[in-house]
Length: 153
Image 1 (tube, helix red, strand yellow):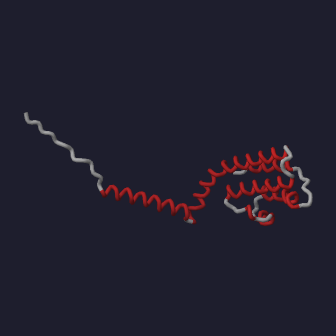
Image 2 (cartoon, rainbow, N blue to C red; image 1 turned 180 degrees about the vertical axis):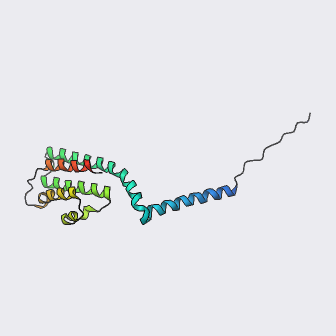
Image 3 (cartoon, helix red, strand yellow; image 1 turned 120 degrees about the vertical axis):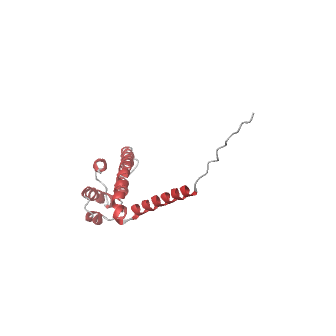
């Protein structure tokens, strides 16, 4: 009895296919870099990217405001220090959501940016942060700051 078997040839990669996949991958990377860093596309790309950052930044800022409010109610922090922290929280929030470096700007420079809510809050914080006495109602300031952050989009 004579039985013959035909064996299939082992599978081989075509080098042309490998080269094609590498070229496609390279084009995707180049396309991403062009879109990400091109002045023409970067504004659109950054708007899409920042839309995902706003909710996370909101949550973080609101948590910080709540911790600050609890510290004040428990008399763990002075009014002046609370206003300093409040100013930092809102500035960092705006910097993270807009990309504008407001953490290093003065009150006058912030006013020129035409961000009404931020300008109003800065007007409220400054006398309390830098005056001789800090007699402002910090809890009201925290409430107003919370409202600004909640309605920010």
